[in-house]
Length: 297
Picture (cartoon, rainbow, N blue to C red):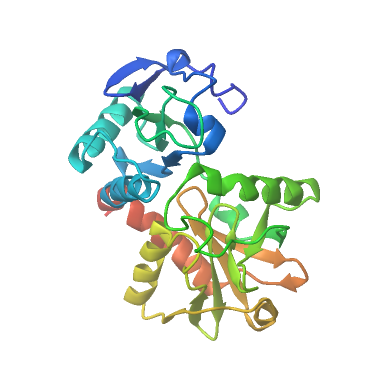
């Protein structure tokens, strides 16, 4: 399925309140969002037929739109119902879920306050990037050529499509050099995040993770922090300088797509996935699949 272009797949997509054939879920070339980045989205995962943290993701979608100056035409419960209906129609139980909302094509130009706000939800099969054994080998990251901007220059608390432009550039550059991803600094030179996930470090049995004051506070990271706390692992949120990476022994990415993925290398720094990375990787998978865990007991 991975080789099939996304505009040529079978199935249905929830689009403005109704289901349409996958191949017919289209927008006009003069859609405002395509030219000016006026779109917000979420990345969600379904495990065992349930979307993990659906309420948190749906609320963030609403909040992201409001930060960009538009209101979604659907409320929280309507979005949740539409998401669940789309997942059910897909026939998948373990899947990736992508809600997106955007300004339409009534007028073109920077100002388009009266353009129709559209929304769609798509669901497709997307297994974990790596098996648990492969994850524990750790992935390799390099340094990103772009930095996370000053919050006074971007709507950093919105999961806005336009903010990912520098992530795409940075990830492509990393892949061209043989790396899996890139680590971004922020505008001050502190460690921020990878191109699509938050990052966590380990030292002396404690977690250290960058203060999310100019990028999204990952829903997955919050979940992993809560899991760590339940296991008696202290979590330190603070600014981290790049040279501090030499003092950490483990590192891992956290995100909806990445889940918990250990890191073996970031530029000149080396890490060894070990006890805490493995513990949190498995504990997170148990957390998101409660039905499977309960059935196995």
